[in-house]
Length: 106
Length: 212
Image (cartoon, rainbow over all chains, first blue to last red; front, top):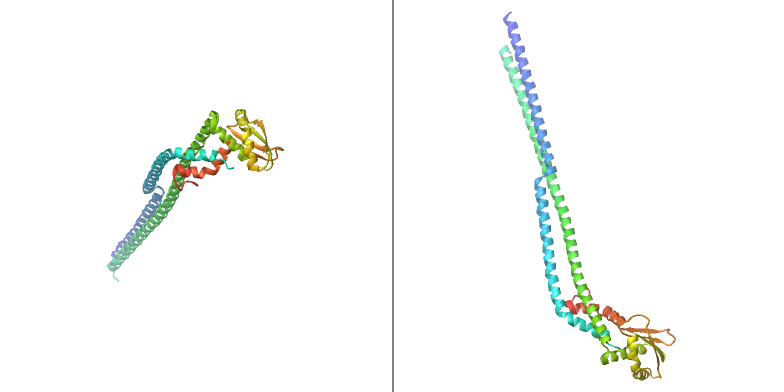
């Protein structure tokens, strides 16, 4: 084999190596893009079950329950106060209606 | 160009192309992830706002219902006390009528005279319970005399037994029974209860409660 042919073969081998290097870079690029897309899908998919929303719902439900309990307590206080006042004024109310019922207008 | 230089150029170009490919892919990957993160953040924000709006509406509705229920309970308490007054007055009136005596006889005479005063004419039918009929017949002279003075005319009264059950009092009607005046105790109590419902509530619960 002459020196010229050997050099040419060497050149062809280097050319093939170069092509292989580019092909591998393309493959690696595809992997990088695939991983990025998967990461994006995971991020978007996580929205469907955000634990922060469950916490928010729970916190607000607790708050609503607390406010309802406050309303009930307020009602109990009002009711109790009303009963006391009504008990104190019962005879006066009875007397007023009794008097009106029996009051003749001639 | 020498062969060695050509070989170097091939390697350099290949390296440059590979680097470019990877660099572009990395940049594209960063962009994909950044866009996804931004979209996720926006969606999360929108959904959080929507969730808050939903819970706000739920809170508003639930608290309004709770307040309405409690208000209903308070109204029931008030209504209970008001009814207690009506019932107690009915009991006392019933007892007073059953006991009879001078006070009740005077009331019976006045109820009859009030009925007479409300109608035209001079001849009237007085209907009472069997119990009161006996009492009123003893008072008939006095009642007739007072009625004649009221009417400025000679009044004639005819006593009848009321066919329906009554606590007491009288139903007065003209002789032709075209006009009548129900002055039974239950009719008076019903009228007074209706008229005074607001007043009774005011007395029981204080001012401001009459129309609640």
